[in-house]
Length: 145
Image 1 (cartoon, helix red, strand yellow):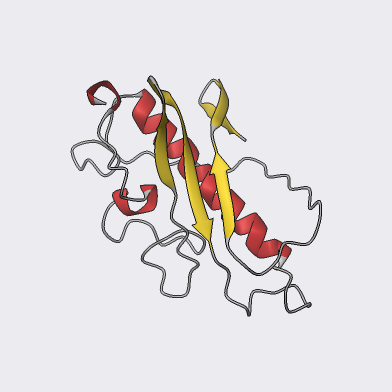
Image 2: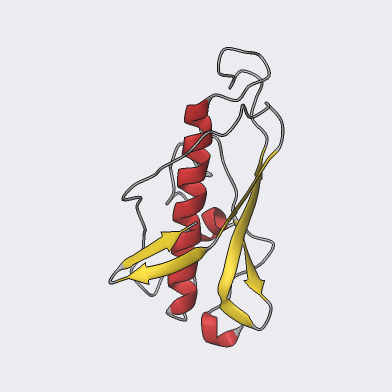
């Protein structure tokens, strides 16, 4: 959508940030030892500001929590944190009609103020699908669920 600034659906938010700008352990494409999570923005029908980010993460078998088929909770918290931050950042850029990675404007970043996870049951060491959307804003904060 022109009004919301271009965001290529086939490029992850993390890859749009710009070359060598994101060294995050959880989602930075330029962290050699990192998890390299990829979050993709999807517009909600008829309203690009109400879209969401989607990701699929496949943990390495070594990312277990003791039991060989249970993903370590810290890895889960890491990918939820990164996915939520990238969702908030994509929303912020779209809401302001800007393009992530546009070198003519100062880069905008979001950080996590708090993170709460309730582990309802063990998560197998297999593909994990994440979906997040901004559910509200307060002053300069975005609330992601």
